[in-house]
Length: 137
Image 1 (cartoon, rainbow, N blue to C red):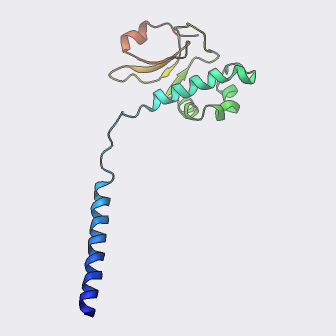
Image 2: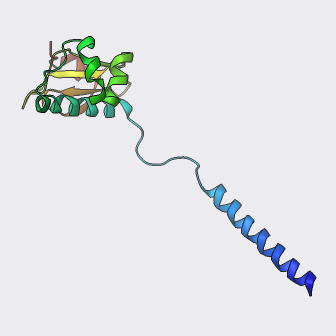
Image 3: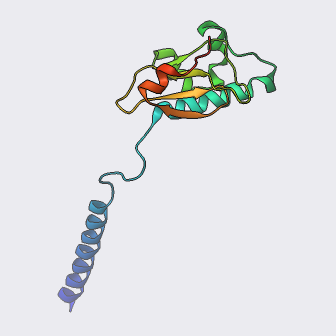
């Protein structure tokens, strides 16, 4: 009688741990969904930063020294601006209907690069379109 109880308990524990192990094996693996686009996210963050400046009676920064005190307002973009992966035409701001590039990723990927336009749109331009696009100065 006692041996049957121990057997049942042990069998239940083995089954429970077996199910737990199979569940753990099924978790993780490869991620599906959109490919990460960190520079796009940084440009979108920078767009929000520029959009919020007038609310605080601030002007777009004229250089990196002027940007540093404002860095907490653009935490994602700041990292890329400071390490040089994101190029910003210092002093440029947003403008309704504007089509000039005010910020862009530094390196050109095979399928183009991400840019922030004056109108606030973040788009990917091919190398040819990027070369031909007007840039803020």
